[in-house]
Image 1: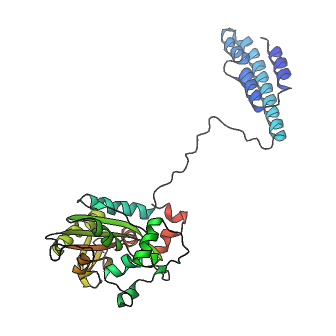
Image 2: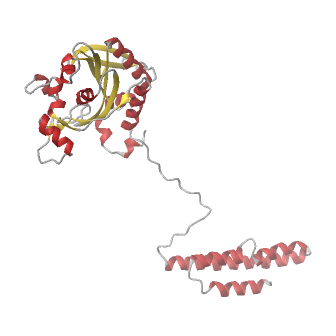
Length: 341
């Protein structure tokens, strides 16, 4: 096909085009690698040099003419279609952002996995609890001084509960949001006979002011191990194994006396990071040997069983592990904070 004929047909065909799709088809037909113009350039190889130079100049002029036609038409279409955004097929794609687990979820799963590796079963309990299980059955009766340690969210009777919770509420006293995961000690022992070892991960609530170290909601991992010959030595070994597993053996542990109404003797566990110079001891859990009264409350035979219980703070572990100095960041939904994990 002659160059003048290519120009004439191209100009004729581009005039009625009204869509980008048709314009792209036109570009492939007249400027693509298999176009008549491209074939014309290939045929120049067989011509003598003077004629090849002359015909080559004409071919370049024709290609420039077609490019101008294409660019002008494309601008006109974009002007008439303001919402159109030219899509470049050769442009690298953008990878979509992937979500990831919340840091508390990651730490909680790590804690649970560490206990599972040494034979602990994972159970769950209700966040809406009764006064009986949250306080009375744990040796924290009404007007007991220990209740001052748990500021409570009490629930009004108008709150809709499940049929099971309503029955328990009528039988076991008024309802509340659990202040700790310890009620599951009683709930589990009521329905299971020793020996057993369990952990109970879950959210707790306390009616208190928030600051860098306190929140009205937080997570605990309750632990309970009961058998015939369970001692504090068993507890110290198990907790040391778990904490060293979580922190990859970069911590020191110490155990000191404390008081909790449902254990005797009671103690607290502190840790210190080895890699930090002059770092302070930080408390991570309360624990102790289960008080005999709790075994009596669930109907166990007297003097047959003994065991230990503990409550591990998930936020405290996460703050130490990741060097976070404000607990409120976990619940702020600040994407700048979350993207660091």
